[in-house]
Image (cartoon, rainbow, N blue to C red; front, side, top):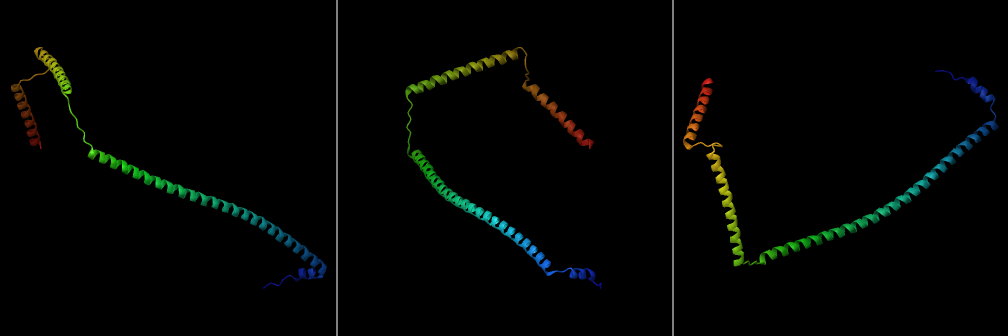
Length: 178
């Protein structure tokens, strides 16, 4: 263990005066008091700000509570309106169903209307006959002049038989090739 340097302590003891130490303690205490008062001032300012914010929050809270009450009232009104609209729609649907069940429509066709229908049918049939006649004439003209393709039944049977034999030969060749 080392011995402390006592020379510095002795010198300090020789220079010691109680008035000087008392003066230093006073200055130190005044500095501490000033620091404490500054901190108290800062704390008071913070408390004022906190109180202002608290009041503002109370105002906001009151406004929000008022808004919530208004929204609840509006929601209840909308819910009642929805129920009322549902009742109206159900009433309309029921009235439509009732009207469909109990409404009887009696229709009669007079002789004038039947004559008009017969005339329209006759005109339509005549127009169709003219179209068919023109088409038949056009086909006859094509066949007469040799245009288009036409195969008799006998040649068609021969063509299918040859084609079948070709397919059969290809199939047998493929089987034998395996």
